[in-house]
Image (tube, rainbow, N blue to C red; front, side):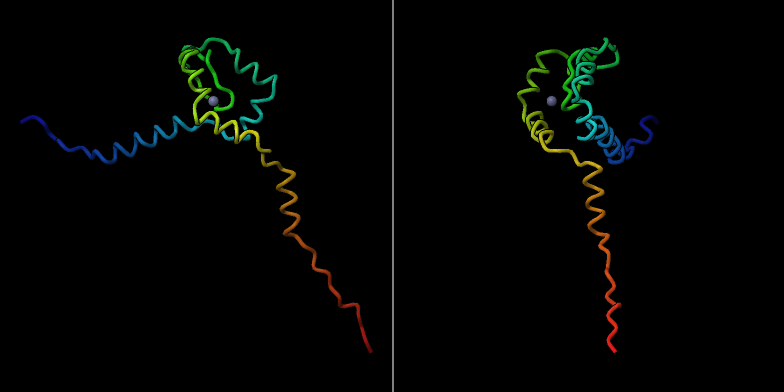
Length: 121
Ligand SMILES: [Zn+2]
């Protein structure tokens, strides 16, 4: 007796945890961060009230990466890190705007001019 169901679908469990990790690491989309980088919003994010649920009570936040850090040391460390610099580079590029999307849509909508008015007798 004892030890029933010794093997409990370990692979499925791993897949699940993997998914959770991915979700946890997924932050915001670049365009959302562009909005966050606007001074008024960035200041709010950087000086937010203490929140027990957040790492470091939400006092160490990287706006560009929309990530919280547990202390100023890890935040400083992060600012020098590769992922952060990569993100800065991404943010320098102009975000994909609606205007651009409309322009692209307009290009596909080429009007076919009918040249049937040339009636030769
Ligand atoms: Zn960062």
